[in-house]
Image (cartoon, rainbow, N blue to C red; front, side):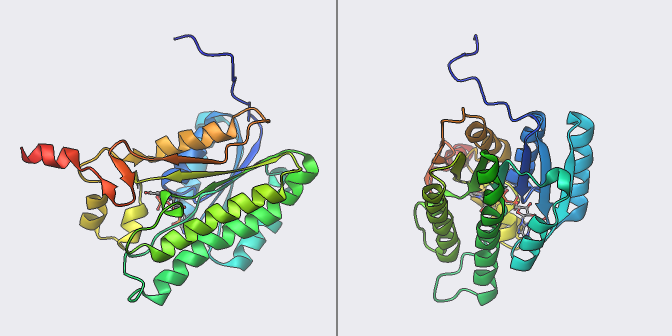
Length: 271
Ligand code: NAP
């Protein structure tokens, strides 16, 4: 099929892209896609070794510049430091991908552990707010920039056992919309990506290493994978500059809500 010339993708070659949560899952897949597009990368996560491996891979395969930052994004002072200490060659961030995040447990609201609740609130909210503030200033001055926040379908709807995770993702959506209002008179675009179930380390983290519980989340369907979401992210990032994607809500074909999953493959295997 001949490719359309109606919307040639925006070239982001040479653009500087800062990705939080680049050591696994969606952030890692997005790092590969941005590198393929020729972008220069700042990769952030806690697991230094994973970041180092990815840096080596991307430099070798795509010949792009990569700078790694090892930081705990749930700690405001570490987030502020990472923004303040970017090396000169990486200071002019063009695309901020606020992706790092997690869910911890599925306890009902009357029984959740404080450490889980605080862990989710601090991880899913702190860096989104501080990095947006720190990096949007320069974007406005340079008249170019895009903030892309990875939210969730949990930011659009609620489900039992998801109170704090849903709350943080509703926050991300509210914050994203407010930031878009604040930046409306500028060239800076603000987008959200809201995936349904994606098969990453997310459920292993949520169930604290219980592999059988984690696997059960994705059993009986073909779930989304990290590359599917990276594709959505790249779509938003490479629209022409007058096009601002507000939110991409994306489900696996056999999912229609957080707990509405038709486990067809599982039923078939029992036949
Ligand atoms: P993942 O495979 O567990 O990856 C999470 C990433 O976030 C890792 O790179 C992790 O790196 C980083 N991270 C977590 N806590 C951090 C902290 N305190 N400081 C720095 N980095 C931290 O999960 P994923 O599915 O790719 O999740 C990415 C985003 O997608 C999250 O915001 C999540 O809420 C959202 N999402 C996921 C799904 C899903 O079903 N998977 C659905 C909707 C939305 P380190 O551990 O190395 O620090």
